[in-house]
Every structure is written in C-alpha cells, then in structure tokens.
Amino acid sequence: MTRVITIFRREFAAYFATPLAAVFVVIFLFLSGLFTFNIGGLYERSQADLRPFFQYLPWLFLFLVPAISMRLWAEERRSGTIELLLTLPFTITDLVLGKFLAAWCFAGVALALTTPLWISVAWLGDPDAGVAVAGYAAAMLLCGAFLAVGSCISACTKNQVIAFVLCVGACFLLMLTGFPFLLEFFESWAPPSVLEALSAMSALSHFEAVLRGVVDGRDALYFVSVIAVFLMINVVIIDWRRGG
Amino acid sequence: MTNLVDAVGLHRRFGAIHAVRGLDLHVPPGQVLGFLGPNGAGKSTTMRMLTGYLAPTEGSISLAGIDLARNPLDARRTFGYLPEGAPCYPDMRVDDFLAFIARARGMDARAGSGRITSVVERVHLGDVLHQRIETLSKGFKRRVGLAQALLHDPPILILDEPTDGLDPNQKHEVRELIRQLGTERAIVLSTHILEEVEAVCTRAIIIRQGKILFDGTPSDLEARAPAGVTKNKMDHVFRSITREQQPRGEPIG
Image (cartoon, rainbow over all chains, first blue to last red; front, side, top):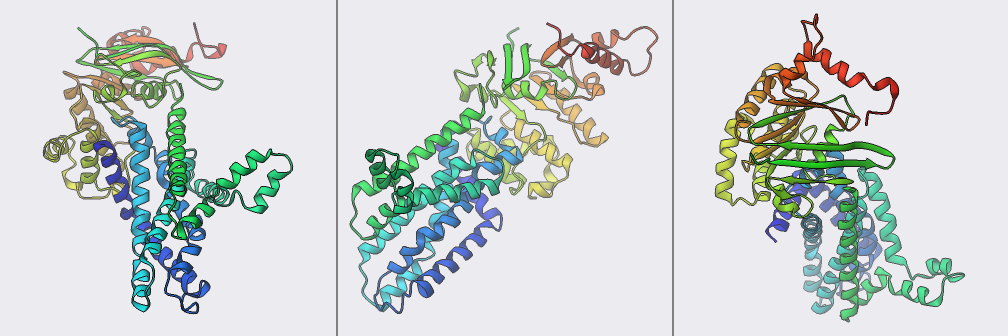
C-alpha cells in the first residue's frame, strides 16, 4: 500500500506541475456551465435540481477524461522514464493502481469544483439532496470507468494524441453499446444472448439509472467491474511489453 | 568470492531479431566491468535484462544471490540503474525527484533526506537542487540520473553510457566517482569510448551481435595490438575484433 501511495503522490503532483491542471479545470467548468445553463436551460425549467448538469456530463467526460488519461503511460514511454519506473521496487499492480487513483482523484477535484452549482440550486429551491449525491457518485463512477479504459489504451502507445483519439472512440463505444444504432449492426448475425449482453453493457444507461436516484447495487457493480477489468488488462499489457 | 551479478545463458529475441545470443556474465564485488561493442551489439538489451526491464527469452539472472525472475522486488533493491539517456521526470524539481526515489526505495523521510544530502554532495548537485529537471544541462541531468542510482547505496551499479554527452571535465569527475564506488561494489557499465575502459574498468567485455568476442582486462585487450601499432592500440584491437567476422554476415558460433 505504501508503494501505491508513493506512486499516487508523484502522479497527483504531476498534474499540477504543468498548466494541464489549470487548463483542464477551467475548460471543464466553462463547458459544464455552458451545458447546464444555455443548453440544459437550468433557469427556464423552473425546477430546482441538477438534472441539466448531470445529463450532459457523460458527453463532456467523453472528451475531457481521455485528456487526463492519455499521458499516464504514453508519456513514460516517450520520455524513457518507464525504464526507471519498472526497475524500481514496485509491482506493476502498484504502478497501475497508483496512476489510476491519482487520475481519478484529479478528476474528483475538478468535479468537486462544480458544487457551487449545487449550492446555488439549493439556495434557490429545495432540491432532493439524495439525488444530487447519487448524481455525483454516478459521475465519479463513470469517470473512473473512462479513466481505466484510457489508462489501458495509454499503455499501448508512446503517442499521447493516438492515446487520446483511441480512448475517445473506446469510451464512445462503451457509453453507447446497447443503443439501437449500434445494436442494429450486430442484429443481423449475432445470437440474441450476445445482443442482450451488449445492451446491458452500456455505460450511459447505467449512469442514468444511478442518476434517477434509485441506487441499485448492480449499477455500481457494473462500473466497479469495468474499472477492475480494464486495470487488469492494463497490468497485462505492461507486463507483456517486457516480453519474455 | 561470491559474485554479485550472475547471468547464465541469456538470450533475447525481438520477433525475428536475435539480439542477445547466449551471454554469460559473472561479476564479483570490486570489479568494474566495461561493456563494449558497436552500436546495436546488444549492450543496452543486456543491461535491460540485468535490471529486469526486459525479460530474457531464455536464461537466468541472479543479483546478490537473489533470482530476478522469482523474486523481482528484492532483486531490484540490490542495484542502482542509470538507463540509457538518463531519463528523469522533466517537470519535477531535483530535490522532489530524489525524494520520490527515496520513498520508492522504502526510506522514511529522515533517512531519505540524509541520503539525499550525501549523494547530492557526492555528485555535486547542490547548486541545482531546487531547479526543475527540464531546465538542466545534459551534464546535470546525467548527474541526477547517477544520484538516483546511488541513493540507496546499492552493492550493484548498472550504468548505461554514464559519461555520454558530458564535457571532458564532467567525464573526468564521473570516472573518478565510478572508480571510488567500484572498490567494494560490482559495477557494469556500457560505453563505446575506449579510453573510458582504460581509465575506470578492471575488466572489459566486447560483444557484437549479441555474443561475447573478448573477455579480459583492459591491458590484455591492449596487448592484442599487433607489433608496430604504437598509437590508439585499443582502437585498433576493438576494430579488428568487431569487424573481422562482418563480411560473412553470420556471427561465429
């Protein structure tokens, strides 16, 4: 555990050592405000809740979360520091977990900075606190799933732009599998059980399920499993690239 | 005397390329082994295998008696490694970077700062301690890499081209340091500068296409120069050893 914390501390500080943190937070807050007020119409709805904010969050995450995860491994590979890291007394699991948790916490900080929105709504009306808490929990889970996918993809390349683009693509598929236009593609040839499995895999439907405030253990389990599976694949990729 | 580095039957393939072909390496304490060879001979690949960064396709490695494949974490505690090009995190300050390495090496804050102070003094980093690594000259970056490798005072040092890119004064300093460190440690360093072998190494190995072509002391190497050659004897021998089989394409053995 100490080893994971050591990696976590370095990685978390690395976000703030460059303008990345500031740029990310500013753009995230600006866009989330834009979606909430202008497109989501928070005022026009005359309802004191954060629905317009959470509703567009997955789409915002789709482009912003890969920007956090793209550097995780690609940068280590490009600069050669991966050679240093893999010869220090860390296990690959320590490294993968430390990096993932640092990225997740950084995203958590950005998300926490949107709470003034919640405070304003609470001041204007009487929103359901439970729904807001569920919304933030769902947002963190979705973000964690995207980060795990992104970390995994970042481990495959030394080019951060490739890592970013592939991650956006992969997260898009993860978000929308089970949606009609993607299912149609499989409908003609895949057996019904596969179709059913695919439609249960959509991150967006699980996200919306949690958002409704009906916290179902299965939705949380879904996100936790996605995170666990992709982090395990991440470990395998790093180990596999050592060859043998 | 027990060896600190024992590598037996090392092979490494990258797809169709057979980069290292059956290398045996035994290094006792007090030996500074110079690893020589033309570019692409398999020097870096061998060092990467010794440090566990690359897994050997075949063969076994044990460091200070610990099997690298079976017990990687303990084995990694026995050596300090300066990878090729001395990579460090450019956005970190020198002191923060060394503090990170100290934590990674399992030192608590007090032990870590004590070791950092002594290593910084040893490699003369005091003036740039609070600077970001990306702002440093090549010479200073290399010294940060050395400091990182020395931090936990390991019995084994593996240094990939430790003086590459340094000016003559810095080269002299680093060689002096390696000579001092080599009295009780096992040091494996790679280089393609022959004067370096003369200056610091107690043993030289020449490899080409992943095979050992020469293994002996630097003076043995020099003694191989044909009569009549008086200047740059080592250069002459190096060229004749590493070039003699080339026209045939396939390496010996």
